[in-house]
Each structure stands twice: as structure tokens, then as C-alpha cells.
Length: 316
Image 1 (cartoon, rainbow, N blue to C red):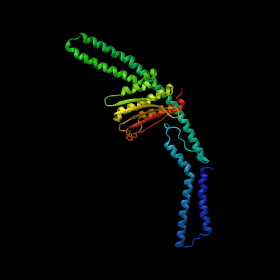
Image 2 (tube, one colour):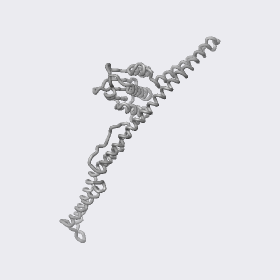
Image 3 (cartoon, one colour):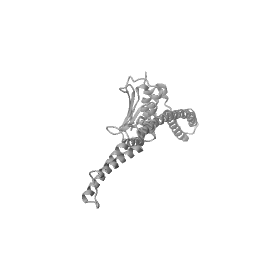
Image 4 (cartoon, rainbow, N blue to C red):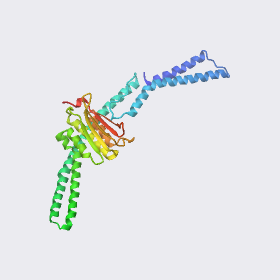
């Protein structure tokens, strides 16, 4: 039965009941007596309440579907409204679920292509920074050294300062290139890459420590890259915004056989801030490998970024 006929029959049943009562025990005089007016008002109130209750029951599945539509988020897949009953609302719910399945699949495909292109572009930029800009600055350093060796004494100090400035710029270029293209991840694996990441971000004011549980299962390249990028983004956000003194990067085996990454700091926490581009990027990367990402306040303050992979992605 369609939604239209269900609502029509509900209202018709209430009205028919009211008319039958008028032909039965309820009568109306002319003019209407006070007692009869009270009975009519009570009957009208009861009729409205019954009609409202019946409509609420009939439209409850539609309200649930509306809430599901309002809260649907393609970055948090798998949530589906329950299909209940029969008729148009049940069919509408099934159609909505099918649409979500298609949208999530299409988003996962397009995200994989976009992130793959992004990684390739990062490799290209890192290679150009290392090969082109790096070599140019190295040549400048050699020229400055040669000039300083043959320059008058009063110019040597300035030339040495120019050398140090150029050397600092060269180190910064190399640091940027390492972040764009984690060569240590490709050459030595995830464990060494996380330790290198912790060492790179550790300063006098920020201590970054990597804790890696022994005996972890071997991961495929895509999973290792996602774990590294999520850890990198988490530590970068902490260093830039959290005013933290310590960050812990933990990699451990999960009970179901997967691998879990935890990045936890002692900073000022999220503070109700909306998801930024970095967090959205982490969620998109997690979708690529079917992992679950949660970002929340830590128990003692700070921020906890947790990424749990599935056992099917972690094979020997």
C-alpha cells in the first residue's frame, strides 16, 4: 500500500469513528448544551491525538530515513538506515542505501586516483628539489668557498656568512624533499621510517618518540604508505598547532591480526575545531585500505590519532 493511501485510510478511520459516535451514544441538541459541548471538545481532542499518534507511527520510517540522509558522510562509510516494513518508504530506503554504496565506491576509486597522482607529484617535486635546486646550491657553496679562499681578509667574514646561509637553505631543501618523498620508507621499511620521522621532528621543545612492537606482520606497500602519511600528518599538526612537549608514535599488533597506529600528544587538544584539510586527507587515506581512523581528545588532554588496519591487509 502506498504512503498516500495509508495516510488517507488512517484519517478516514478516525473520521468514520467520530461520525458513528454521533449516530450512537453521542447526540447534539440545538442549541448545544454545555455538557454536550464538553463531550464534543473531548471527542475532538481525542480524535486529534489519535490522528497524530497514527501519523507518527506511519511516518516514523520516513523520519529515520531523513535523519540518515542528513548525517550521511562518505568519509565514514558503512552506516546504513535499516530497511523496515514494506511499500514506498522501504523501497526509498533500499534505493538510498544502494546510492550510498555506489557513491562510496566511486569516491574510493576517485580518491585512490587522486592520492596516487599526489604521491607521484610529490616524488617529481622531491626529485627536482634534490637534483636541480640541491645541485645548484651545492655549486653556489663551492663558488663561495673558492671566493672566500681568494678574497681579501675584510670580505672573508661576509663570504663565510653567505656560505652558512646557503648551507642552511640546502639543508632545508633536503628536509622538504625527504618529507615529500620518504626514501627511507621505500628503502628500509615502515619501522625505520617512523623512527626517522620521530628524529626529524624532535627539537629542544618537542620530544617525539617511536614505540614499535616486535613481531609485527608484514604489510603491503599501500598500507605502509598510509600508516606513514597518517603518522607524518599527526606529528606535523602537533608540532604546528598543539603546543605540546611530547608526542608518542606507537605501532602495535591488534587482537584481530591487523596493525594499529597511535599518535598521541600532551598538547592543548582539539578544542572543538572543525576537521581541516589534514584530517580529511587522513580519513581519505584510511578509506583506501579499509582502515578505521578515530581522532579524539586524549584521556589526560592532548590529541589521540588512531588508525586500525584490517587483518586482510596485513599478510605474511
